[in-house]
Length: 444
Image: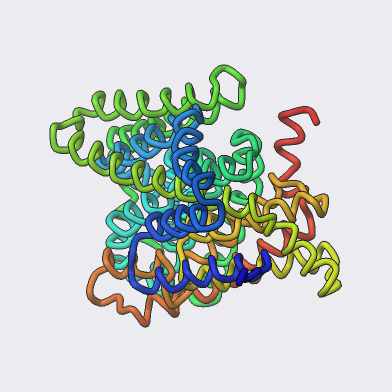
């Protein structure tokens, strides 16, 4: 007797299998890759055996993938060599006398680190290890400090060279340069919204972010000049990456190499390129890069299965015809699903699971996939800070001093999550916030 199963039922079985395996605590790439490979063999027999292998070849032939380890290396080199610490000291000098000034300086620091790194983890590490002790020592409210660092570090996946956007560009087949350009406007908007919130809260209640003393800002001129010069060095590194790329002087791969070289030379010039710094940087780079590559390979295998099933057309039929939703209704439903998944999964897992379904549907409805990539990235920012399993929540708990409890960390992100959701709504209603810069630079 032959049993016939619909494509919708097969898709449901695949997703259920992934959800069940993820509950076992296995690594994301292992779960996704195994489900995709086993499904390919069961569905197509010998013809499906090559899918996992083809995914590997596709990944190895994708030249822009070289940028991933270079950008990760650059970020860890800046963090481990203490160059980011110098930048914060400059902001401390310039903004410390303003109510909430250190918190504002922390947000600017996060934006700068984002432009040098492209990962939220680097900003979180620098903020928690450098900015948090300074602010707590000067009487800043611990919930304000925790929220500012978590929200500010999440900007790392919006600013070029965003590694998350590189991953999205790979899966959605969109130009990474376009995605980077589209992320600049929203990232700066979020930074302004966060700083505006800090200013307003500290005006209402100065105890949340007190000014530093006059003695602390009364440094000798020579020391002030040293701090300013130290702060200029990271700006040079930022220009070596994004500046040269946007000017057309370097390609995507060349800009990542230029950034890695600039970070290494900066550490050498500061006398901080020690054996220990180099070893830690290389080990962290290898660990993060391998993780991303395994995830991308698993995603390609899983996507191939879905393409073969035609599941994306089934989802399109369900949303648009059976449920009668309009394009905007479908888009809002997608974002809500991202926010819910973000409570339990990281950004790469979310993208890998839903990309085979959502990206073809978004394209068929006439939405710009670059703009949609920005929306996805914003929901990742919210997911990083959303209980119960927000990545930044647990990373903050691991890095924060004992007086900052998990309850404080959870409570601290409420206003900043609201700011992120407001920003998501603004980018949805006003797409030009994201698309004006790429349209201007690319002359569309």
